[in-house]
Image 1 (cartoon, rainbow over the protein chains, first blue to last red):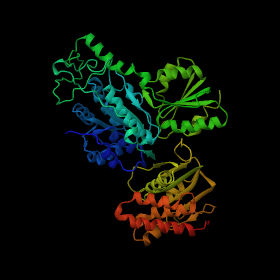
Image 2 (spheres, chains in turn red, blue):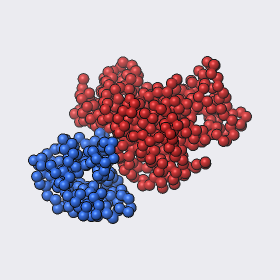
Image 3 (tube, one colour):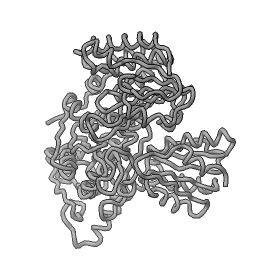
Image 4 (cartoon, rainbow over the protein chains, first blue to last red):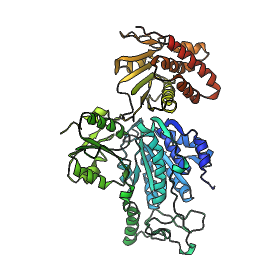
Amino acid sequence: MKYKRDPKRIREVLGDKIQFILGDMACVYGGLLAGCSFFAGYPITPASEVAEGMARLLPRVGGTYIQMEDEIGSLAAVIGASWGGAKAMTATSGPGFSLMMENYGYAVMTETPCVIVNVQRTGPSTGQPTLGAQGDMMQVRWGTHGDFEAIALAPSTVQECMDLTIEAFNLAEKYRNPVCVMTDGEIGHLRERIVIPDEKELKIINRVPATIDKEKFIPFSNSQIQKNSKVPDFPTFGTGYHTYVTGLTHNIYGFPATDKQKDHQELVLRITTKITDDREKLTMVEKLYIDDAKIAVVTYGATARPAETAVEMARRKGIKVGMLRLKLVWPFPIKEIQNLASQVDKIVVPEMNLGQIVHPIREYSEGQCEVVNVPKVGGEMHLPHEIFKYLEGK
Amino acid sequence: MKKEIRICGFGGQGVILAGFIIGKAASVYMDYNAVQSQSYGPEARGGAARSEIVISDKKIGYPRPTSVDLLVAMSQEAFDTYRDDIRDDTVIIIDPDLVKKHSIGRPLYKIHAQQIAEELGNKIVTNIVMVGAATSIFGFLKPDAVRNAVMDSVPSRFKELNLKAFEKGLEAGKNAKPGL
């Protein structure tokens, strides 16, 4: 199957430029705009609308939708589609994300570009299906075994569900790594106005295909085309580049080298530093009233909504509070946190979990300021005053 | 400017669609920022369901109501469950056939939405009658904007029925007087 991204057709299928839609649906729109042509998934609340939307719209732009037997199969199919040259994605929630951990690691190890939308709900286990949470923020970073780097985005609005899904595809293609859009039941099931970007406003990145002489091709080393890139050129299956793909430790030729310390070290250092070398380039934050702030809220995803209201309340009372919102949570924006911690007396971290991203914030604050964990669990987002009370001075 | 609206009833009545229509009218056809959220039980029918809309000319942070300006109730259970945070000046609209125990010592608007829908031939449009009535009574939403949003949101073979339901609701709202 040969898919060609057709911007005009995609917009015909998406409809009006300004719409009032669900966060989950906005992830579908983002996928289509990015050129996603393959979706495999297994429906799960509160992510089912992503699968429903893809089932309805993807075939209309010439793409393929498959409902798989479970989430393990879903990500496996996505990985296969990606090796066939497709931009591919899946969507799930906590229980499905847990099942995907095996193939998440396989995608990392085989350097397969793909996008996973995780509409987080309360856990552990099946938890509260219809309610939102931010309980998988560490799972996305550490949930699969071994040494790896995660790339994870966290939308706070419906518009961002679309925009950051496009960004997720771009990053997946650029770094040849799975990229996760860590939304949640609150934002996924919120309806808001979105504006669909015109083609000229969009930046679309495609993986660099292997073009070198087939005899000279090395599948798992630095790029043979781009200077100073640790991301290998992509040998799409069927284009004649012989490639052996394995989750086992492999040498630059792709063949298992399971007893070679040096090969493993080289491989793992390359697939992690290809991302961390660009940590600062990747950093995506939004700052509100940071310049003169003595207290800062550091937040991401749904929690940024009540946090922003709380910061506005505090500012109206003349309290010097600012907000730093992480649009990209992993790789962690170390410099931003170091700088912030050197400026403020206190960092307040509200999360819809018992405390996850507060840990790297505390680590990279390096003791320069107090870091306060403001957890809320049970499927409801913080009320603004529940955050505000931590902002009323020391 | 900020308006907070809650529409509640039982699952299957279309309270979420009603909220969607109001949110779409405000955001797409009136150019405000609007967010719509919902909560409902796991049942497809029955159980208390609610749909909430926040409309503002500024960026909307916390997306749920903190102080409701308009409460529309279409079932007794929902009316009893979801009115704990209303103010003295909150506009309340109920269907007295569905919310029989509504004497709470303050005036509210009574719209026989289900009865009007039945007269039109299908009680499935009760929610749209209520949307029409709320449009007139609350005064903030432009009838044209809401009408456009209704037409966008219903299947084409039911457009005429829904349009009639909306117009009947608008009219009922215009004539309604608050009573105890």
